[in-house]
Image 1 (cartoon, rainbow, N blue to C red):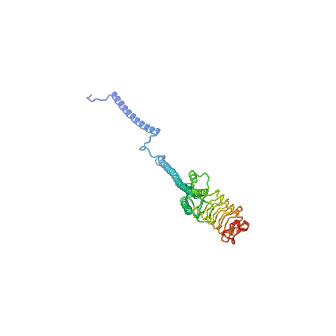
Image 2 (cartoon, rainbow, N blue to C red):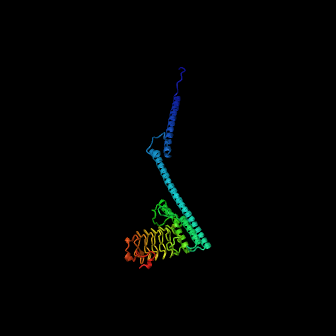
Image 3 (tube, rainbow, N blue to C red):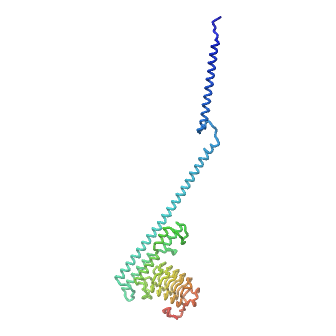
Length: 373
């Protein structure tokens, strides 16, 4: 009997059930936590949420961290280089266009200035003719001599101001054209090309000094100031010693013109009519007379070195003491009745007999070639 109480079977059953329930509850909680953690990991994989702290580097990490940034960098570099090249190309093109425009402006200014020189000269000579009536030289009239000398001085100065010949013999316009071809268009100088650009065509439109000199000579001729009257008098020639280098007189109808002792190196006389003109003592080296008519022309003491006499009519021309070294002739060049003497040089390359030249070595120098038989 005593006071000690012992658990009844029911109580023991209740306590055991309670412990079992607790054990079951604890087990269930552990399973829930593990399930939640597994779900979290699966969820992160499904929706591509990466947690670098929870996984090891994979095989795509090098692509992500190295190759992709490198590729993007290379693309950026290429774009930068291409942009620089394109920018340089545009800049170079703009610079070339600007340079071409400067050349055109320079040629335009020079052409305008020379046109003004020619206009002022023509106006001045016209006034002298109108006021003084100085149409022909008169060696017996002191006033006429003074007027003639004044006109000659005006002519010499105007021609000098018109001239643009460089040391190499080229004109300024030709130099500008070559500069544009070589430096801007990349074309070899003096090369004929198709489709030349606008700027080069603009340069072709300007009158160079040769053309303007030709206009001055034509003005004097039309004003009857270049006739052969008194042509043997040195004081007569307005163009005596004048600078007519590279003058352009192609197709000019100028018979009986007085160009005695003028400096006409490189002159252009293609198909010009100079019948009966006086070119005695003129410097005509490298001149081009192709197709010109030079019948009865006085070419005595004239320098014709390297002159182009292709298809030229030199019938009864005076070639005494002339220098014909390296002249260019063709089968159409006519020398019939032209006379020469022992002082004429450059005849070695010509068949004087078949060409019809006449030896006037023993004839008086004042005889015309047409009078020598």
